[in-house]
Image 1 (tube, rainbow, N blue to C red):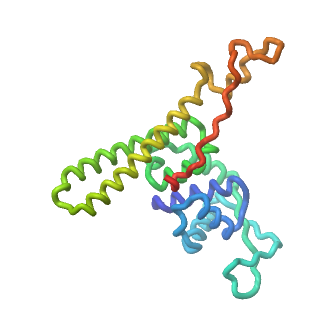
Image 2: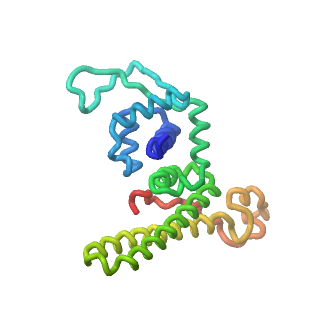
Image 3: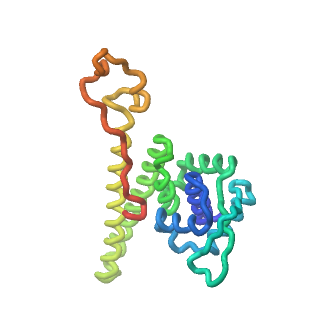
Length: 230
C-alpha cells in the first residue's frame, strides 16, 4: 500500500467512525476536514472504499432512500452507505495508536492531528515531539543548503529558500506551543492527571476539595487550527 493510499484509508475510517455516510458525503467531509485531500477524486476514493469493503473493514448498506448527485444529468440512483465493521473499528484504533516515524511525515501528521480529539494523550505527545524532531532536522538541512548555495543563486531564488525556511520555523514554534500545552495539562501541580485526580479527592463537607484551595483548572481544549492552516 502506498503512503498516499494509507493516508486516505486512515481518513476514511476516521470519518466513518463518527457516523455512516455515503461516498458523496464522505468526499465532501474529506475536502472540508483535510485540505490536502482536495485533489482526490471519485476515481481515487471509490477504489479505496471497495478495498476496505473487501478487507472487511467497511460494510455497504443500500437503503431505500433515493439520492440525486449534484452532477447527475438524468434519473436517480440508490446511494450506498458505508459504515465501519467491528474489524474496521479495530483497524482505526490501530492506526490511531501509531506514533512511529510515518506519523511525523507531512501528510500522515495532518490526518493524525485531525483525529487528535480521539487519540490518547501519550500518543499525541509522541506524535508532536516526533514531528518537531523531524522538522528540526529539516531546518538544519535547509540552513546548511542556503549557506552553501548563497553565492550561486540570485536574490529571488534565495528569497524563496528563506520563505520555505521561515514556514518550517513557524511550524516548529507552533509545535512547541502544543507540546507545552499538553505537558501543562498532563499533571496538575505535580499530582496525578486531571482525569484521575478528580475521583481521588474528598470533600471537607462544604463542597471544597481537601488539599486544594484553588478552583479546578478548565478542561483542555485542543487548538482549533488544522495542520493545513499552518
